[in-house]
Image 1 (cartoon, rainbow, N blue to C red):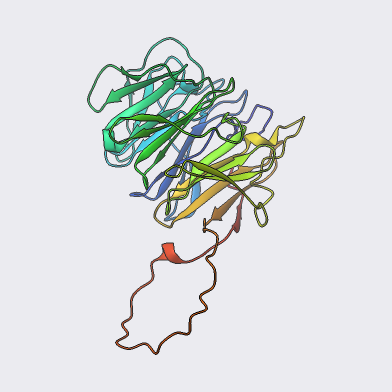
Image 2: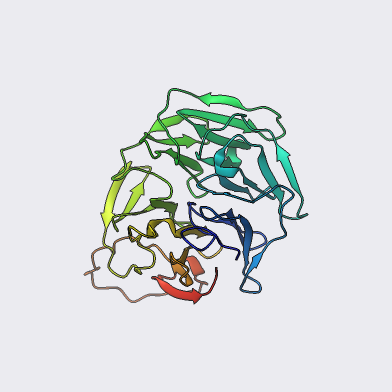
Length: 326
């Protein structure tokens, strides 16, 4: 692993991995602190984690991902920018394996979100309260919205179920916003904790679109963006490996990454223990609170037909685990 830093693996300082539903692979690029970066993939067909060929740009030193990686499944690109800094944005063609530099905003600004929004055919990036946009085929970024409140370590989450992006937060605080497919930006309810990557994990259920938030004080919340409501959930049954464990030595909240797997309607959590411990994978199927039981006497059915139940309708829970993914 050529690991140098305090976490002693290559998954910290990030907010998630990116799933390509076409090739059925997961992509991640990041590093420890300090520690040389590595481009990594998981392939469903072979059930293996692999070090990808080294990119043409240097990954020496510190190559944190934070929330500055995103994927364009339609056009077949994975995007990454080093700690969302001065750029350029590095674009990886998933099908050809070729990396290309694309323009960025210039000048260093640490660690804010980057996301591809396919309904708007654009990349979006937050930087100190301004939302920037780069249209497909364009060579320069434009200001999409200013006067917002974000700071470094902010988040951006594209939700393909709801066709929206939620973003905001940061280490110095910030608002929480929704970018709709018509380009409008609205302010959302204040989250129960600060959205500060990597001290929390915000992801979404790939079936319902409900957002899932895991916090560094070991709480679990859901967020319904249509109703604009946060709700605290029980952590009963949630593996301790998933819940962040603050630690003065290793700061374990750096070490769990969430990836919605749309093909199967589950969220994959990849977790490596700080201090050089083992790595594991967990799968989670979100399910709503059960409705009240039906007390009405059923009638005798007639004219029955058989239908195939899709895998997304099967109620799963936490499923552990595969070791040694790091």
